[in-house]
Amino acid sequence: MGTPITCFKAYDIRGELNSQLNEEVAYRIGYAFAEELSAKTVVVGGDVRLTSAPLKLALSAGLIDGGAEVVDIGMAGTEEIYFATKHLGVDGGIEVTASHNPINYNGMKLVKAQSVPISGDTGLNAIKSRAESLDDAKVNERLGFYTNHVDIDPDAFFDGKSHILEARLHDTGSYKSATCMDAYVEHILSYVNLDNFTPLTIVANAGNGAAGKALDAIDSAFRKNNVPVDFVKVHHQPDGTFPNGIPNPLLPENRADTAQAVKDNAADFGIAWDGDFDRCFLFDAEGNFIEGYYIVGLLAEAFLDKNSDSKIIYDPRVYWNTEDIVNNAGGEPIKCKTGHAFIKERMRKEDAVYGGEMSAHHYFRDFAYCDSGMIPWLLIAELICTKKQSLASMVKERIAAFPSSGEINSKLKDADAALQRVLDKYEADAQVIDKTDGLGLEFGNWRFNLRKSNTEPVIRLNVESKGDIPLMEEKTAELLAVIRDE
Image (cartoon, rainbow, N blue to C red):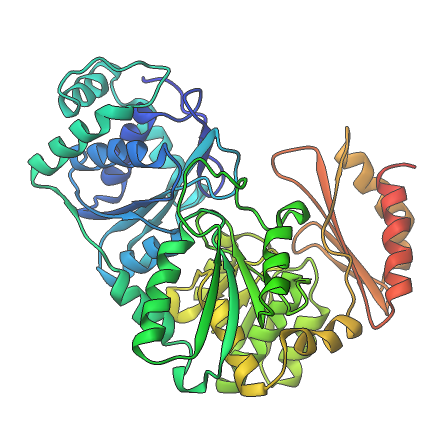
């Protein structure tokens, strides 16, 4: 039995560098992945973190020793792996990324053929067991082979030895570098009609992550097709040291640079991405951050304009706006538990055209039912041009009709006790009790959802009302007092 591996989570792999995740662990994961899936070919990529390349190379060595050929698409966002896995018709794909986690972390996102996600009950636990059962001596011997038996400091990454590992991988004949960028861009742009675009100025903040490279390819395609869009590129160059902070625009303190650039350049709207750009966040022409909830409604409406009787998947934290839009457009709204594995599974089951979460994950049927951070802003840009309306004007009425609190986190010593306090106070008066994900209670003209974190003693609250901002604010404060026992 090898050393226990502690970086496996419910839906992916995330861990602190060296203590939980290093090249040895990456090798084990690659070997186990290839064996568990009986994979003949696997596509790999990695984000811009300085440790992603050595981890990806060690992962590739394990995949090859496990019987697979490896196609490495280089520095890439997670959605590029989703696309390449399906486009190339391979047996699986792995993106080395820690997305928005601190700089001393890294991880992996794994998919099967056709980019079907792998979670705990669909293979991830089995991969973990296989990885742990590998013989320590054999793992060390094989890593020694790939690094030319150069001594490896167990507390440091391969650093300058990565080039030795990469050369040996190529020598095996089972490892090759490739790109799917042209095909990826062609697919991404198929969601819009480029002839609909009128002159736009768009601020695009890649956060020094992986989005910059993909945006440049889209920008190049725009220029070739004479699409009148000008980009103001902020923190554009990939930089694994993240000189401007870890890209996570969900945090309010990380939005100022994008907002200021929008105002300084009189842009039509702004975009900011997280590190592996599977989420995009939007700002209106005044630099105001637009909650992902209202973007879900806009995109649902856009798809239903073209597919009027389609199904739309949404998460249960806030949904009155989404349901109203989908019902009025003739679609079928379907509520689903929060989380990419749940959303993707339900998308496939229902053959839904689109799915969205308030956390800025947007899923598309024709994108292997996966999430993309590039398709949403393209659709919004097209809407601005065709409707001849600003982003702010498109969401203003919806925000007024269904104001929401945004997600508010409370860190507690006893989350279960807080949940019980809320139940004791509100359950008897609730008109609807929904336990799709956490606790959702409706009271006619207002509702809330309360969910416990799976990983920490935190409760997440969302409140919304029907056209009554003071009521929403009053109930939010009231609930927080009960939750925090104030």
